[in-house]
Image (cartoon, rainbow, N blue to C red):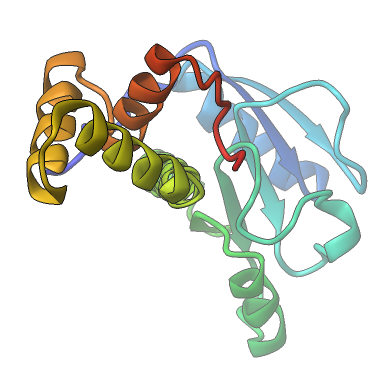
Length: 195
């Protein structure tokens, strides 16, 4: 299923982290037309929160971005000037969400849409990975619940698992969470991830 594209950026706050005042002003003018409030800075990021960041890849460096590559708390767009292989490699290592040629600020809307979509997909994937890890950490709960159902309902493993799946569907929870419900109902007040 394809996620809906974010097409409206009105009211959002953009920061342009670029050493050249004219570039910051040109981008600010284009972003203002799209309804964003814009601040230009160099060389440090402002402390106030922002919704999108534009960063110059020619002079940008790791210390300017206080997060792990690919873990920015907002979409990040690289502003490309010289296209030197080393600077492009830096931008790719940063896992920026989109790129915009400094010579074509009129294409900023496309960069915003692409960056927002890529960033949102990365967020969804992180949430999915965290949920997978959470559920994997609850395997012992699942095993204990199956054993409890086998004992209390005098059924085999398949019968117990079927009952547990039915409970999960009725409660609209993951199988591991249904197992936790079974054990908590029995009085084994377990918390997630504990043996």
